[in-house]
View 1 (cartoon, rainbow, N blue to C red):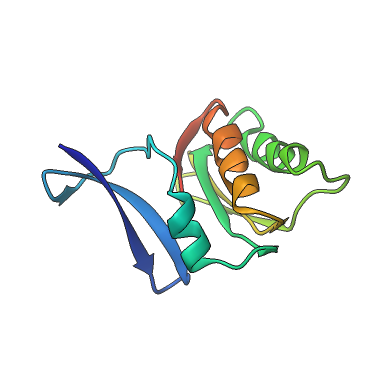
View 2: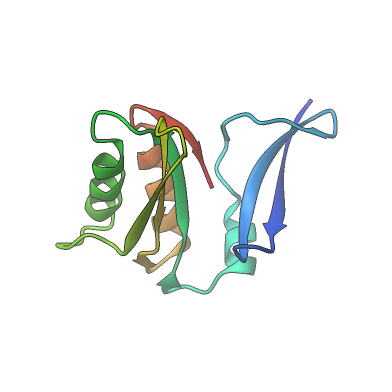
Length: 123
């Protein structure tokens, strides 16, 4: 039985949406988006929202992530972001903190990010 849970990551002060299988954590990509009610209960809109996206560090992955968020939010400039490469250089974590107006914008960004080639995980 697949159950989605939200766990607070105290190091980053954000919710991570972690799939569970028979009550055990599994390191699998999230296949469902967070519930609107959960997002509204844990965030204020409008306001900044943190997206973390991890993927393969080849073929412009980070640039595609930043462009997808910018385009989905209809912005003319890139949202604030930072990159962190793994020690082996195979993967890159892209952390973005755009200002979003509604919970529906958050879900639209997540839907857009899920389609990016090279995606490994998002939080």
